[in-house]
Length: 605
Image 1 (cartoon, rainbow, N blue to C red):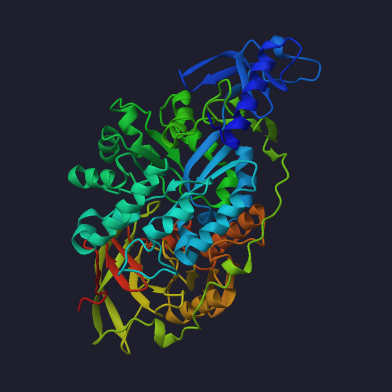
Image 2 (cartoon, rainbow, N blue to C red):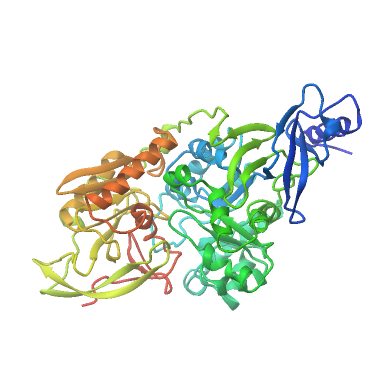
């Protein structure tokens, strides 16, 4: 019999736990005494102690005999004990934070495990960018796993990424122990158009999925608005057992649960689908074992003010669900989906990732234990997590020169033009599409504040094409100036929208000068900005608290100085280039009809 090094280490740990339980001269290191234990296996609450030795749970029950002279006893009488929370699908890039800074804000809220999808940095910097993020993840005390994209860009021919990634790049990434599996397979979200126009993507996808499944890795899906044959094809393409975090209706939720999909119910900063999705459980009585709460995208301000998964649990409880059932959706349910053997439950031999709640319904986190050590108390982090600095190789990712007014103007003949415009849907990455009649002055289509129809462009920044895609946006509710950013899903070219072309030019050039970030311009002057030099997506120069303060300030300025009336404008703007989500989107190649998988003209006539 041959046992590898990890197996030997595990066997030694098991023997230590057995000795502690059966040798009357050995004791627990920690006992949480007299709490209300939330059993996510049986969906019960009952009085019990929890004993911990090293990084692991010894037992749950009456632990008096395990208390010795050196045992640390925490009196949690009247409080609730549950497993550490898991965020099963999120993007660190959306928070604009390093993994380290995100973790500093997240751990005190009870989240002990993060599954991040680095396809944002992968779109900009390819395999090298993802590897740098993997290196950081390995240094942290919380459990951070990554799921990597098997296709970049998601829609070849419709957008330009910084690098191309396909199945041949998967082995090196998937063989890393920090990589949980393949992330959201967006390249096959639009089933029929991809099947008809880019069938080679399906072959490449299935090759990557086959390899991942063969080495025991998971695969995450992305199936917005899919039913019947299309949903079945998507499930099969992902190796038959996948997730979906793009479910927005009760009907979608029902069909996906019936098909065995793990539905990642998204409830983040700008996209909130939980109230609609859980109706399949609260109204139709469907089993919730494959229902999993996730954030997808969080801004640091929300992390600081409201919390992380604890806030998602709290909000879900207010919609009529049993608190223990909701806690299952952030503990045992995701652990089962991912095949985690030692987290997600509190039981003998499992990792001692524990959350102590002082209020169950309000999900007030009193203490957090991570690997058996107290990591946070009353919202304060007790661990020392050093700031992380990324190498220069992942910076200076903006590879184009300044733009001119002539570059950005949208032109048409005559005095009036019929134009197509993307229509914003608040708190969703879905969009609509509509046509408007616009004035044309000196050959340029003029922005129309009265109709709330403003120019929106995407400028290729990776130095591969110098493309500029042009369209309009309805629903930004901007009254003055322009907003630009290098965060534009998924290829992360520079996206800009504004009330006048002059300010749009200044905003784009400010992004270029900063090597990525966010910029707001009014009357030719910088109203506010935030450099994001790591891939044009993340800052390693500020703490999470500092980024939160800057984003709060920028959001306020967007409202007071630019008159912007949409919630979290920077995050909404970033999603209007996401071509895997219906209906119309904008990329560096132009206005995209997502359902038809084609570029369409902005000027109709």
